[in-house]
Image 1 (cartoon, rainbow, N blue to C red):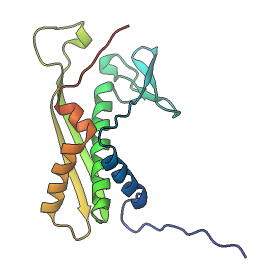
Image 2 (image 1 turned 90 degrees about the horizontal axis):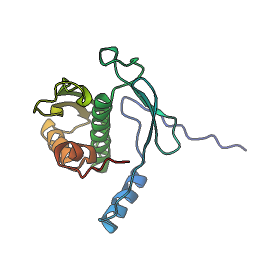
Image 3 (image 1 turned 120 degrees about the horizontal axis):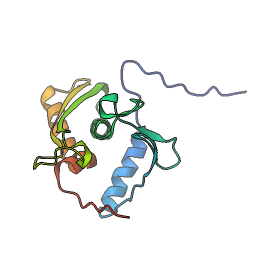
Image 4 (image 1 turned 180 degrees about the horizontal axis):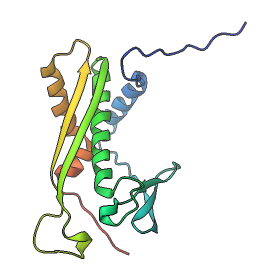
Length: 180
């Protein structure tokens, strides 16, 4: 007699994450708090300002520029991709922390916007003294969890900002070497 596979039915909540797997990751982090993982990406110029980024064994992640910046508008530009990385990292942290606390997440959306001066045109334009890169980034989180007061959600958001690897990359100096 065949046994029917159990089907997960979602009713108004985010697809669940593996709580047991999350617990294992938590314990592993506590057991080895100084472990550092090196992430890799190979970026290959395809022409104009379009680039294919190869990460693990995934299909290439394309980055391009919009027409106003002489690109073909086929993908996010590098600065937009960094906002997407920040939003995704914060969302992962919010979802993981909510599950860890036993919360059911009904809605999780983040809206990000960032201000940057692009007049230096990658070092070929106005190179007068000014900040290069984002000067301000704003993230608006819309998160709804069953029976969780908004003050607790706000505390969770602050906690996740503190522990987000990408948020920390945005807010503290990082050692960067670029060379041949």
